[in-house]
Length: 138
Image 1: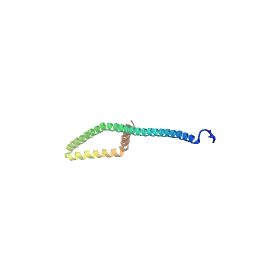
Image 2: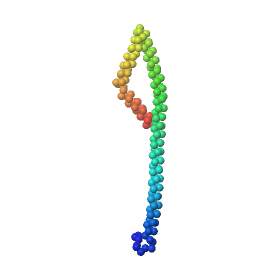
Image 3: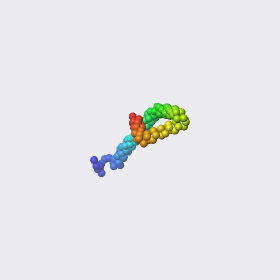
Image 4: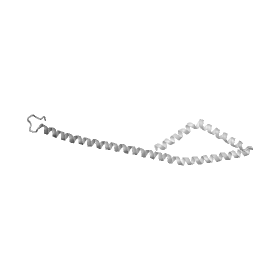
């Protein structure tokens, strides 16, 4: 409703009331925005903390599953080392010279290593990668 020149309420009073109302409205908006910013900040901090905890959980799962596999691998390698050593000594005794046995076992291991590298490398890489991804996405 437009204010007339001849109105009873002075124009300055109306401007003062409008200023007070606008100030209160702006203060409410500022408080609302501050509350929203605080909530968004808390949400961001919580999301980062959650991501850290999830990464820690997955890392713990993967490492804890690797430890038993590592122990089995080490024991298997020790077994194979002594088996190779025993076979080398046995073959060396049969052939008359100990180093012949070690040479034959070394050549045998080399041939197996070359075969694994050329024929089973991709398969082993895929199996290990799939196992790792399976553990991480578990």
